[in-house]
Amino acid sequence: MDAKTPDPKSPDLNSGTLAVGDKSWSFPVLHGSIGPSVLDISKLYGQTGMFTYDPGFTSTAACESKITYIDGDEGVLLYRGYPIEQLAMNGDFLETCYLLLYGELPTPAQKTDFDYRVTRHTMVHEQMARFYQGFRRDAHPMAVMVGCVGALSAFYHDSIDISDPHQRMVASIRMIAKMPTIAAMAYKYTIGQPFIYPKNDLDYSSNFLRMCFAVPAEDYKVNPILAKAMDRIFILHADHEQNASTSTVRLAGSSGANPFACIAAGIACLWGPAHGGANEAALKMLGEIGHVSRIPEYIKRAKDKNDPFRLMGFGHRVYKNYDPRAKIMQQTCHEVLRELGIKHDPLLDVAMELERIALSDDYFIEKKLYPNIDFYSGITLKAMGFSTSMFTVLFALARTVGWIAQWKEMIEDPQQKIGRPRQIYSGAPRRDYVAIAKRR
Ligand code: SDX
Image (cartoon, rainbow, N blue to C red; front, top):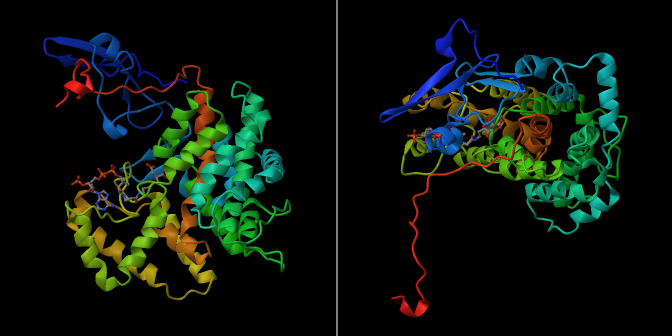
């Protein structure tokens, strides 16, 4: 990895000084290609005997990466330097997967080869199908995903040696290829329908829609508009810098755990309503609001410090401007509703009015709360026929390539070491054991 220190002609930008009491220490400043510089404090504890304290990592760069860049103030998202808007409107999801994994857009030959390799890994070991039988039919599909993806290392022993570059790439291809199959099987299992095998003559997103919505009793024709919308939704969700689930995958991978186990950890973290679970929570919230006349009541609750209610699908740790993905998500939402002939969706009415009111409300303006990617995705996915409980599964399916790319980058970083944060301790100082007979 090669974060650069600035031009020696400007020495004042090469280091920072920390002073505590009558002591001071100097630390190097590292500059990336774009975005904020970092104060390299890796030697701080050794020099000062102190730790930094940053719960939630609001000001902490945990790693150096070349994969994704976000400018939260400008509402910019770049995958390997390419704006998300351009990738989402011009390419397909497997092109984005190639870009995130290898760092460059594929040539036509590279794209054909990559598509071929992914397509021919879409089936799962037949024994996996029996693994699903252990779940209750009403299990949340995310519970099934965590279990089944974590179990993959029990089936694919030839791609878990993380020190072997070939095995790392085979595991990466397998994860990208098999997630749609595993996700579709989780969906079919929870609705009591038979699993549908992948078909190699379909593109990635068409294959996924067919595995979800086809039944053996009749032919199924994939709607190309919906397949394109699905593919674009996958692109929007593919990676997002060091978010909570990606950081989970990196931390799990830093111990040398196999890639399937690391991805399962990422799925578990993504499930939370503050993260990937927000798309399911946002649709439930819109349903609970029910009508535009009730929006003021919920806006009031969202602003009440004593009320834990938050507007799901609003706000973001990094974006203090409109999430660029949300704009494309909203456009895709309208395209899908139009294609499906849904002239009027009450939830969309509530969402559009809620967005209008929130964006003109001082509280949301002052706290820079804008709709994020999860605000419109739920309406779109519901219209496409997915149950609400499948929304975060689709997020996990798409984010798998980002998790894998970030995991691979970490494993291949020569400076990589096990992640092991410290703490500030405020518990009881040392004290001696008291026999129970002497306790009052
Ligand atoms: C994703 O990190 C990523 O990149 C994630 C993601 C990705 O692609 O991986 O982009 C995907 O997770 C998108 C976010 C989905 N989550 C939601 O939509 C849930 C609702 N949003 C909030 O929970 C919240 O905005 C977070 C969790 C997203 C961000 O939380 P932060 O950055 O920790 O901000 P905060 O909770 O400290 O809030 C700052 C202030 C607070 O008020 P004060 O304490 O300063 O007075 O803003 C308020 C919060 O109360 N606030 C909200 C709010 N979000 C923040 N108030 C009402 N409604 C909200 N949605």
